[in-house]
Picture 1: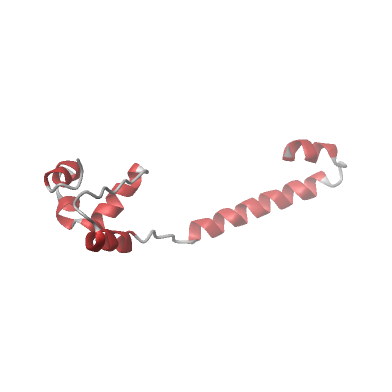
Picture 2: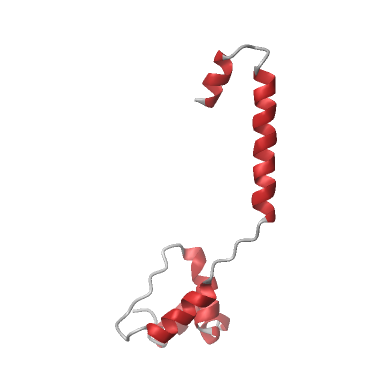
Length: 94
């Protein structure tokens, strides 16, 4: 839609708008790359450790989030050779 709109505009305006879009895109990328976002896995793990019941389950949808969660939830399993087997033996995953 954006490209179609650009080509329907006057030829004199096109380079200005394309340049503005490029500059804004680069500026947005720079801001995002320089902003450190850190998910509060330490607070989530602490909450689960203090409030969980034996039958409660924790489901982590994104597989890349398992490691940060396990770092705060159980250091022994995190540093083991096989995080999943360690968690299973401790009863974390069934």
